[in-house]
Image 1 (cartoon, helix red, strand yellow):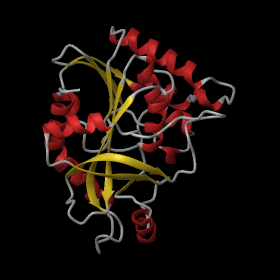
Image 2 (cartoon, helix red, strand yellow):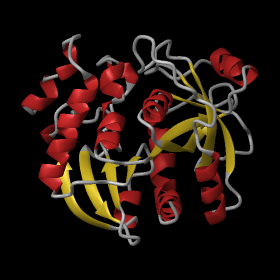
Image 3 (cartoon, rainbow, N blue to C red):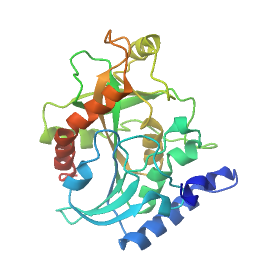
Image 4 (cartoon, rainbow, N blue to C red):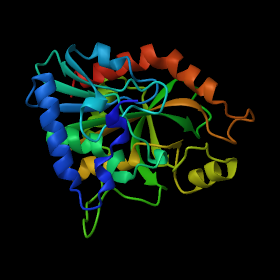
Length: 278
């Protein structure tokens, strides 16, 4: 394990998370040779191949080389930070190292990648994930746009008297662009639970009754931080499985991973075509 994996600059409660993000952005500029990025993408389970399709990777940096980042704990997250030259001439920052809330590092660490992306200049944040679906018509492998979220983590990345409007958090403008690429894309409300255990059937039922369509363990906290940083957010979920209680079959993490691998070529191509229009 690299020494950077053990160091958490956010352990100091007096540390300024935005200053840490600024330093991280400077390190990314130094390591990649790119001073400014326009778009940032966090590629969750099943979405990783999009990094190879959106453009020319001109630099790839181990996440552990950048302050505040560590090796990902989830299979399918590659643990690198890439600078990609898009066909449009814009620059994309591809984040393959996501810290989940359930890892216990604190919410500042969870949203550090988003704040770092904003500090590099990115104005659009694309957040993707693998998740459970509540709608029976969403077969495993279905990509779904996130229209809104319900945060059940009992936490927020915002501290003190920081009041941020979350109306249209998952920008309708960007969802409309995604539908220009694939008019069949459905959308739903994402519910973030703390994890790492899967939700119980009763919890899934509750999520549905309060307006949720998708359940997972990431994204919502990151989206709030992105809005606070002034970025537009596009959220997309890969439905890897029916949520607990929707299907009579117990959840199996290996099967969830397999569904993501099977869908990856199709959804990565879809995301690349969307990014081309952003």
